[in-house]
Amino acid sequence: MAHEHKLAIFRGLVKFKSNTQKIWGVLIFLTIVTIIEVVLGIIKPESLMSNVLGMKALNWIFIILTIVKAYYITWDFMHMRDEVKALRRMVVWTAIFLILYLIFILLQEGGYVFDVYKSGYIKRDF
Amino acid sequence: MSTTVVNTGTEGKTWGGGNKPLNASYGKMMMWFFIVSDALTFSGFLAAYGFSRFKFIDSWPIADEVFTHFPFLHGVNAPMYYVAFMTFVLIMSSVTMVLAVDAGHHLNKAKVTLYMFLTIIGGLIFVGSQAWEWGTFIKGDYGAVQTKGGNILQFVDTEGHRVALRDFVVSDSHNERTQHERKGGLWFVSEGALPTYTIEEVAHGLEAHNNVLVRTQIINEEGEKTVLSRAESLKQIKENGKIVVEGANLHVNEYGSPLFADFFFFITGFHGFHVFSGVIINIIIFFNVILGTYERRKNYEMVEKVGLYWHFVDLVWVFVFTFFYLV
Image 1: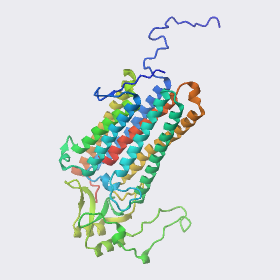
Image 2: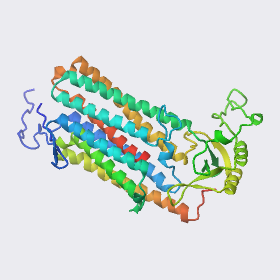
Image 3: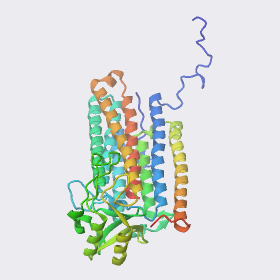
């Protein structure tokens, strides 16, 4: 049972001595990210309320931080970092492609329905 | 059986079998593929939530006005702290899980046992917290009035702080109607618990209190819910108010659009179900560890497989947390 673990995260910026140490390091990182999210969610800085690409800048930050967290959970807790490239791509690319496709269709449609109610001739609000 | 072909002549070649291009055991690979399909199920739910939200983008409830409670702290406005705590508990139990997997690689039975136990405890704390969260959400806090068109009207004072129905509405014991039950009259119809107040009592209460205003669902340019003027408030309640809503269920929701409650119950419920089944599976594996099953096998891969599932549950929560509570 030779289990080789890749012990460097942040593209080799931080290297750990053992797998256990890496786990604690990733936990600290995830905790910091969560704290940043919660603090931003509570104070909601005025400067981040502007609209960027159809959404508030703050919401984009939340989404990006979430993907960062997801990356480290998958790569280090689920040991995706240690799997072969073929398995990694099979799992990650398939899911990402289908999810992006689904999100695009549903959000596009939702925005369209909103516009129909707002500027069309349908009234649902009394 | 002497005619059976045992040699195909392809041994050692790429398609000759015995090759492991993915370098993962069958069980582990299948767990990954299950996780992909489960991830698609969850993204289907979350994307449907996004659809409904984009459809009602100007009137969707604001999450940190909905989830403001913390256990044992009554009347304290603590938006998000409890969910942040829950997130941390789940990440922490993910860490103990990965430590159990690591100890398994070193065939250290005592450590695997300890870390599996801690993982189970973390999972139970999380499920319990979610139950509490549901309870608080269902019970509600302030109460609201639903209009004929299905919109929610909430009450605020002149400074914009929320006012609960119990603070300004007086229940008139003379017109109290009892809840219809199947045993009293029509056996084939029944109804849920009646709200504490009738719509007329709310209208009287509003007339009697000059400092109470109505807040609609519509989000204004500052990203806050619109507050109506005093005259407008009275008009809305009297002309459009239809039922009094306290708390949330699948039909009505005092926090805003009923769809918000539906998705809340459905998505966090489905996730909670995953956590629950994860805890059950962890308990089974925990006992196998104690009994020494994997010790005898000289292989703790089962711990690794349930570990994958458990991390996935954590992963999903990270997304639910963002899309339900933050964005």
